[in-house]
Image 1 (tube, chains in turn cyan, purple, blue, red):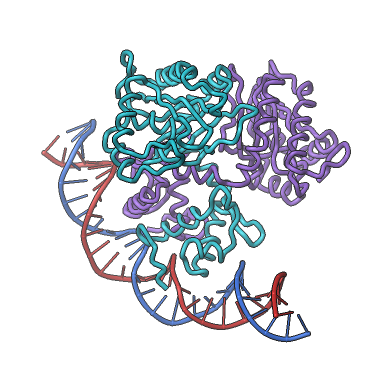
Image 2 (cartoon, helix red, strand yellow; image 1 turned 180 degrees about the vertical axis):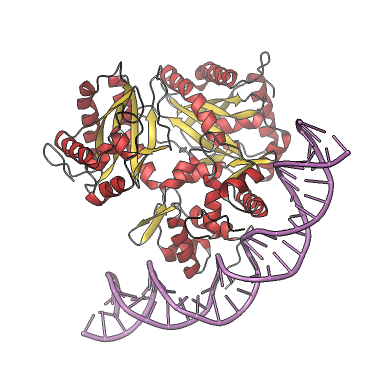
Length: 259
Length: 259
DNA sequence: GGCCGCCGTCCCACTCAGCGGTACGCATGG
DNA sequence: CCATGCGTACCGCTGAGTGGGACGGCGGCC
C-alpha cells in the first residue's frame, strides 16, 4: 500500500522523524493507529518504531498511548544556535522587560521561518501568537523582518519564493513592498510589526549580530496595539540588541550596522 | 569489527541516538571521524547517518563538522512533562526569586536523576552545577530528595541500587541515612541540600504535585552557603510549591501532603 | 445480549536499505 | 616528502526492517 505523499528519502530515520513530527503543541499523546494514520506508515511499522523510540527515551509510554520523552528536551537544550544566544541574551531581555513593562521575544531564523528561542512575558500579558520553540513566517513578524533585513539576498529570495502568506489584513504579502520595508529597516536599525502576525498585536524589533558580523537572531518588545507605543519602545529595543551584539563580539560599525 | 561496548539493540535508531548523544554541553561540534570514534560506528556509517540527520534537521552542517540542529530544540519544547510544568510554574518561580533574591530551580525526575526544566538566576549569581536540560543524581540534590521522598518505594530502591555516588564530602552515600532523611522530608515537606551536590552551594526544596496526586517535580531556592539561610527560605519555597501544586489541580490534604 | 468496528499486539516470509571494508584526494606538519 | 588524519565516495553482501495479516479485548450501538 503505497501511501505516496512521501517527500524525502524513505529511510528509517525519515520515518522516525515523521513519527516524532506527528506530535504538536495540541497533540501531546497519540495511539499507535493514530500515529500510523498521521505518518502514512503501516500500523505494525508504527508500532515497532514507537517501541524503539521508547527504548531510547525519545518517546514515553502513557498507558497504551505514547508521547514525546524527556530525552528530546535534554537534547534540545544542547542545540548550540539556541543555547549560546539565549544564555547571552537573558540578562538583557530581563532588563528590557523591566524597562518597557512589555513582553520580550528572542528568535532565530530557521529556513524561511523564525523559531522563538525565549519569551519573557509580563504578568497581565494577553495571549500571544508566539511560543518558545514555535514557528512563524519570517515576513509576518517583527523579529523576522529584522533578521531578513540583514540576511543575504538568497535568504530573502527564498522567503519570497515560498510565498508571502497572509496572516492578517496587515501582513505584507507583496515582494516589492517587503523589499522596500527591509531597506527602511536597514536604515533605521529597527523593524515594526503592526498587527501583521496577529490582530491586535504589535512589536518593535532589532537584529542581533554575532562575532562574524552576521545576524544571529532578533530581539523584540511585543504588546497589544492599544497599549504599546512601538515607536517609543524602539530606542530601548535597539539599545538592548546592540549591547547584546557587542557582548557576543560583533564588529559593530558606526550608526547603521550593515552586515 | 565488533567494537562491542554496545548496550541496547543495534537498530538504526539506536545508532542514530548514539550519534546525537555524542554531543554534550562542551561538545557542540564534531567531525565525522570523531563521531565514528565516540559512537563506535564505522566511519562510513557515521558519515551516512550524519548526512541523513542533517536532511531531517536534527543536525546542522558547520563547515565540514556537524552540530545539533534547531529541529531538536523545537521538538524538545513540545515534550509534555516539561512544557506543562514549566508553563504553570514560571510566574511562581519569578515571585520566589523576587521574594528570596536567590536562584530558583524547577526539576523533574527522569529515571534516577533529576533533569532541570527551568532555572531563574539572580544577577550576581555564582556559577551553579545545574543547567537547563542538565542532569544530576537525585540523591545529591535538594529537588531530587524532595521528589524521592514522595515517590513510590521502587523508585527510591532503583536510586539506591544504582549506587549513591559521592559528589562532595557531604553527599549522602549510605542507604540508611538517605531513607531516614526522606522520612524527615515527608514530615516537614521540605528538603535541604547542604553542599551535597557542589561545595559551597546550598538549597531548600519542596515537591510539586499534579492532579493525580503524584509528584511531578521539585522547586528550590539555591545559593552560596555563606549568603543563603536555607531554613529561612523554607517557608517561601514550600508555599510556592503548594500554590503551584494547587493550581495544577493537586488534591492537597492537610498539613504534610503524602501522595 | 450480540454484533461490529477499532484498538494494541504479535507473527513471519520477503527484499532492499543499511552496513562497513576499502580506496581516494587533500590538508597538515614533522 | 612522506606519514597521518581528515572528509568523501563506491559497492557487494546480508540481515534488519517492512507490512500484510491474524488475534484477542474493549466499548458502543442496535
